[in-house]
Image 1: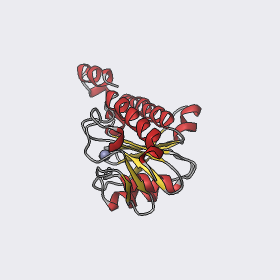
Image 2 (image 1 turned 180 degrees about the vertical axis):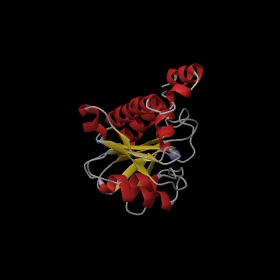
Image 3 (image 1 turned 45 degrees about the horizontal axis):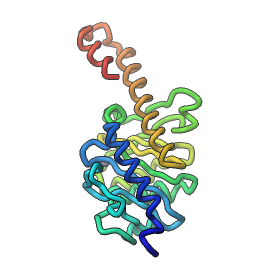
Length: 214
Ligand SMILES: [Zn+2]
């Protein structure tokens, strides 16, 4: 097994990470990405890495079954267990993407499923982004909570008080899904503000400011 075997997937993860950092979805060193290599292995971003200085060789090759590092010198992302659970449970998916994107992360504070609007969007994400109970990042408790919510018909999950996870058949599709999740979150938050029974009591200035960022 040589590093060359993994060169293309590593390069695509580095490029995608820069794109996600540019979008503000990989804020700081947060967020991580896993790509299935075969039935046994996945490639993942390293833990606590600055995405703008990350190199191909920093991408870790990990065995999904037991999270053993097969190739690489860096520590794999602490969310490797969550990505492995997703890709194992959903053999139809190739990519698992975890972000701390602003609006969808705000929705996770509500602790409820978020309905997805529009047939095309539902085909990509599922009828709702499902809420996963809170557990600290990078723990087996979070992996267990996530596994309980995994469904064949849902590609988007809200990690309570934390961020989101989207699955997809390719890296491009995964990025499209997190962008879509952000759009859906803006729509959802806007609707919640407008349907708030105390809507008339909210200062127009506060309302204008809230809606201007959605
Ligand atoms: Zn996170």
